[in-house]
Length: 139
Image 1 (cartoon, rainbow, N blue to C red):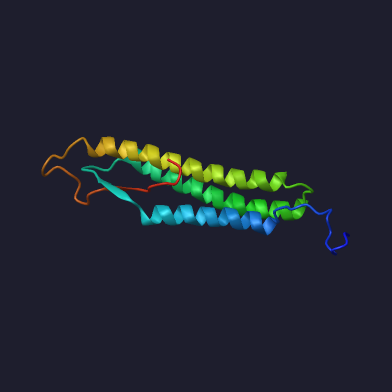
Image 2: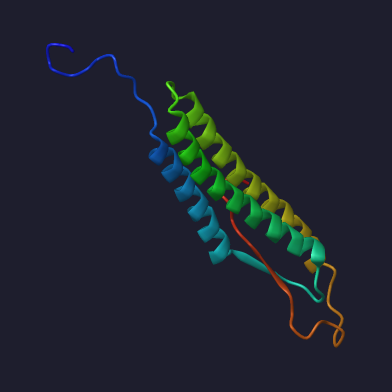
């Protein structure tokens, strides 16, 4: 102990709850962004390839959420002595959110191509398919 009564030998580190909290908040923000949507592309026919992008992006956001929760439990169980495992866990969650934004950006390019194919009057699907693009933070 120093003369001021504080312990100068302790290092700052992220607690497991903080790591899980950061990851969960990032994941929920990314999910909220995707649910609110952004630009919409309207297609004449259903495009399974474009729907695939939406599903992959949502899966990556779900993986980020589950990774954050798992990291919190893992760090609480292992009790690492350094901040490195906590930082690696946060970076992994951020990487999954960035990947989801990248998939959305690629999905927007595909949706733009499908929507640009034009419309044939009277031969489009009755329920007009749409694709909502999220603005993303990173792409």
